[in-house]
Length: 103
Image (cartoon, rainbow, N blue to C red; front, side):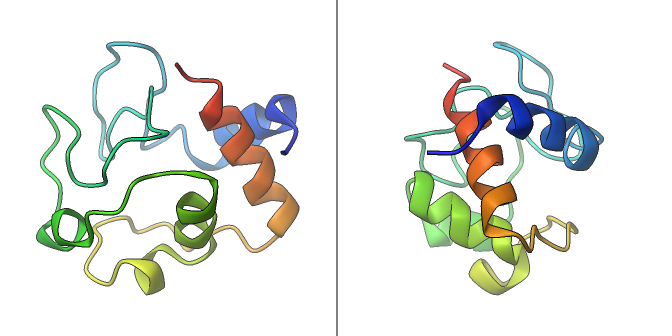
């Protein structure tokens, strides 16, 4: 498990321009990520997901988020996420630890 405190800092640097994290928070360019762990991709209420995201239909967990965050467009070709990815394994682990606290 990663460092959730560092993960929050990374989130504020890399992700906050497109995502919110508070319970009941609004969607931006990307969906609100509160409670993301355990959800099936492409099913976030009130957010228009791409066909590719809906068809992938994987459940978000440490492994799937790690694979997605490394290179989003490689893991889910057709995703609308323009983000290039997080190269460092440790940074991905920390981001995921932060996302896991959002419940």
